[in-house]
Image 1: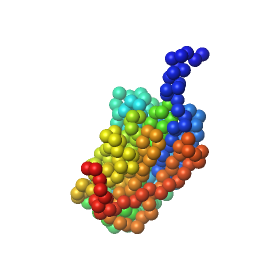
Image 2: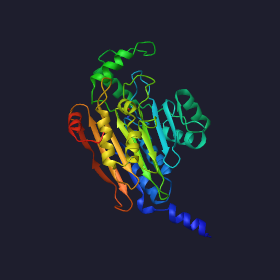
Image 3: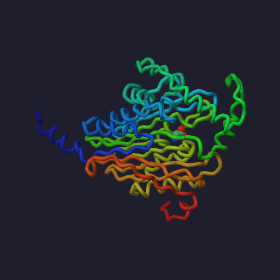
Image 4: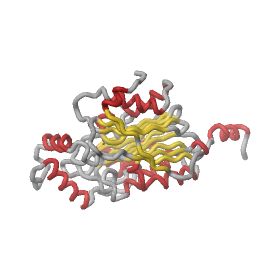
Length: 343
Ligand code: GLY
């Protein structure tokens, strides 16, 4: 029976019309499931975890879960995170090797652990204790692709064992030399549910040919993802080093907090990126959404390279029953510098 109190609560906290989902194009196999779950009044966290799990299970994805391309030592390692915008709590994993379902481990850490971020052997151990199925993410076709990338970008014969060879210079040569041409991506999902809770999730195998132990932005709160029910959410894909240096996802949400529109907030985060000097500078795609579901997605290019503009999926309960596939705005460093910005 509804009491006056819980009637009030349902009026205050239930607003199905405001539900939304925004996911990047790499989330394709998971977006319909996520929308279905939101429509069935599941939480934004459940919708994101199930959506991202589908991407992780998809053997065709070269940059997430099963079938991800190995690092320079030939091993596939996964990073993932899920953040709850109602509590500002998150669960994340980095550099796991023995599991495909990184987002489920992150979810378990969020719900069931005093910690936020587990990496390496400890994260795989935690997953085993929580009965998350052990499964190698490495597939033969990804190993074949790794051999090709190694030959192209490292340009050396692959030794029988990579365990004792020095990899740092080879890695540098490959990452710098391949500017813009390695599949350096991630899947990101941001959603708001019928209780107006906003969440964000990420999952990636990071850069092919990355150095063993390298973490990108995807498992790091504030860099690759951030959500706060009061303002909205943000998530990044592509060159994680840039988001780590500029704390990009947190910056977008903070810019909204101080009164900027989501569009201005994302532009402002692009302006921040123009201050990065030296180090690894390439592309960074910044996805921002405010609590009403207004969005801005833009791709920062350090320099032109002719790659097509990234796309993203967007659904808003009030506006459409369909998922739209939309092209992000691409922006070059010099264009951003010439814009009139607040800061
Ligand atoms: N944005 C994914 C990564 O840099 O690993």
